[in-house]
Amino acid sequence: MRLAVALSGGADSVALLRILAARSRELGLALHAAHLHHGLRGAEADADLEFCRALAAKLGLPFHEARVDTHQEAQANLKSGKAAETIEEAARRLRYQWFRQLMSSGELDAIATAHTLDDQAETVLAKFLRGAWTEGLSGIHPKLEGPEGGGSIIRPLLGATHAEIETYLRELGQDWREDSSNRNLTFTRNRIRHELLPLLESWNPRLREHMAQMAALALDEEAWWQAELARLAPQLLLPGRPVRGGGRAAGAGLDSGLAIEVTRLAGLAPALERRLIRYAAAKFGAALDFTATEALRSLALTGRAGQKLALPHGLRAERTARELRLTTHLESAPKGKSAGAPYTAAIPGEIDAPAFGLRLRIEIRNAASARGTPNGRSGPAGKTAILRDWKPGDRVRLRHSSGPRKVKEVLERLRVTGTDREVWPILEIGGQIVWMRGVELEPDPEFVISATFEVRQ
Image 1: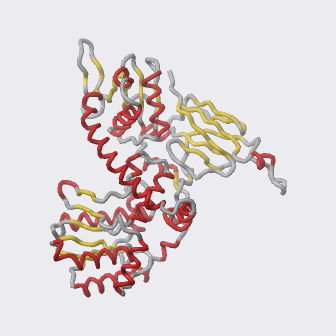
Image 2 (image 1 turned 90 degrees about the horizontal axis):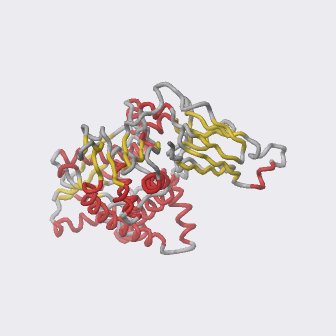
Image 3 (image 1 turned 30 degrees about the vertical axis):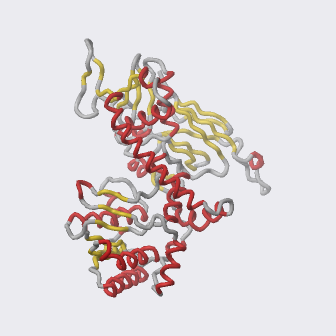
């Protein structure tokens, strides 16, 4: 097998290359090395490339290299109308895109990346903090199959720790490169690596090991669920609308929607109810969070005929006498129109917004600060909260993000289009957006905001 190690120059990838080079004959490998210069970090990145080129030459291995301009690519991606990306996201996309090109060209059969047990623990913890479902907790998968047999990406070091890898390299007398950006605490992963994980390990020294075990369990359980859903979904999801005399009128694709018989849904275990609802929503490109999933379950199991629910990603649900119907083509606000005048409420307080299909409760996070500060500045109590449509120029700070994002870019990333995008709600307090539907923002130090999706007649 023609296998290339994705060689960054860091300790993990250097160790992987040395391990596989020592065993390539035994494993039947035609080993290569591959390095992508991302156009970041200037002279430091140039030195990384030279180091990797020299190491491959020392080991007598074919060397693949390429350069990309990550900043420019991220901007071009945005200008083309696609979702906004951070530099880290763009770099990852370009890296894996290049891997796929190498494999599809026929030069390579597979790429090996040097993700470790530490990377796995960091990934699982990051996804847990974002509120991941089981599939998210599976973390970094040991193997990714390429589309249509286009090669595989494998992670042979997922069971090894970074400390073990550095010990191995020192015993070999092999040096490596250090990426200075790995110490930049503006990046979420670095904060998890250098601050949160060490703190948690003071409670449980085996935390990384346990997080990696959780990922293995989640991966196997998710594989079982996907097989079970592939078996059950065709029996339980009904395309189109029912017609007189029996049968269903199905349009092209998902134009006529999908339905679930509520009596059959009610006979399932809650875990399968949630899975089936999320599986159906995914057919429309909607990734539901826990709150939205529970809102749909409630509508299906306890709702009345005629009740409707608007959800993120442009998804719409309607309860009929016998079914829960999902579609993205139900009537919405006329083009260019607002969902209604802004809703306001004093803080603490509650906003009931039927036009948006939700109710918001705003509470003061720290009661002591509500009365004001010693310098005479007023506290959060008595301020006014405004729930309104977003407007051009609005910016929000996503949780675990390094900077503010335009609301327009966030909606593009959520695949919210058409009239849904025009009337997407945000909550503003004191000129700052502190809540946005379907998005997790950085927690506000003064306010706690809880949202409830309201089922409407």
